[in-house]
Image (cartoon, rainbow over all chains, first blue to last red; front, side, top):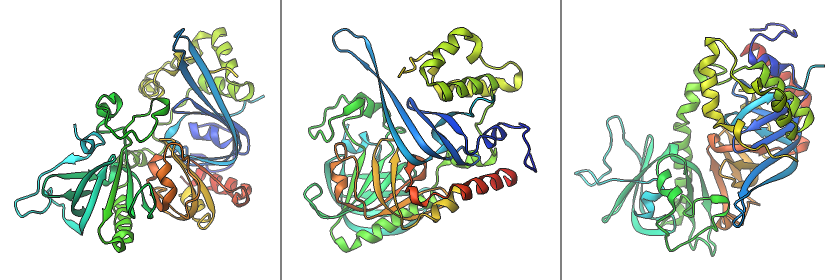
Length: 96
Length: 230
Length: 93
């Protein structure tokens, strides 16, 4: 358990701690993805994101050709609370 | 199958004394007389509602049902208007647990098609309406359901509490790949994977094994699904 | 407890709660508990195509575990405060 502000990563959530106020990528159940600034999180991966772009991907089957049609819906949300139980993956920005 | 059972209500028979068939350590906290039950748009008539520590019973002469508070996703006070007719307590039930087979199959084709079933949704919405003969009871009913829900938080939540960051796994490769996705956009992940097919493989080492399996279960084989390009 | 504490500061404000079954409910936050169960009043907008009858709902209770998102009112998000609270929680938790 990190007791002071440091940049070492000892456990998964440390990695997320270092992403506070940074843009993160969040993959959710149901083919949803979020990109936004991480403003808060807890141990359940509940989060508050800012300037969020949500992308929902849907696959439809063309009734005549049986081809898969992939549709994406995007929307912007100023501030969004995300319930942690729907989260599959949280990625910090690339460390350069 | 009756609409009530289709949406996850448990059929029950009244106990010897006419009350609900209680389990051990279960007791009736509140009773509401003359409450009409409409389950998935099917009117089941008037009965008596019994609230216990963890569930609701509705008993009438012809039938009886119970539903756990944990299965009630939301409940609301609906006022008098054309879609309800009378003020009622409107409840939505969890459609993913019991009754999933029935709902998903959608074969029964009930007469009342409530929703257009867009996007592969079940065509019977898992809804209940409880209509007290005395509308003044409505706020008490709402309150009783709130307290019931508060007494019955989700089981899974309790389990997670124990492990702290339960369910969190750490796979640096995958995290980095995801970070690339954050800055590049999803379509590019396909490219990344193409360059390095092992990127989404499980990390080696026994301690990761269990997490890997859990992750596959949670992700539902998402690696193979097409990732929508922009 | 971070989010429980935070949501308590939003009582009286308007939020939109989006459930995992896609139902979206906008209303005034009346109360929240430690499980993030949510009570809303003055319900105003919902996705009516799917749930037309929800329009006549005046108060509702949503089980925390079925919430997918809560859209927050921009004016009531103090980013600095959230960062501090998150760091404190990360250290203590």
